[in-house]
Length: 106
Image (cartoon, rainbow, N blue to C red; front, side, top):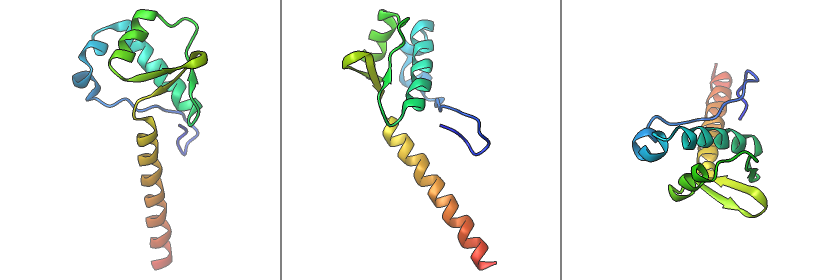
């Protein structure tokens, strides 16, 4: 997702470490999760493509943890991504409404 300053970012919540300790403690699975999260953010709202270099064991760990859903043709989706994106859009709309309303009241 692109911020107002043209920079791109993906969100990784701190609670991930506690909710998915098996992924957190496996360097290959955690690195894959971060890469897939970034790829999914770029491709959203469409499914993203799995990298050709994806390690099967790391991918299996993410699927078992229900962090991703593997789709046909080497594609995937991120669990909860749509909800998170909708939340961010709603927050942005609210902030814009407040900003424009305060200008009108000034």
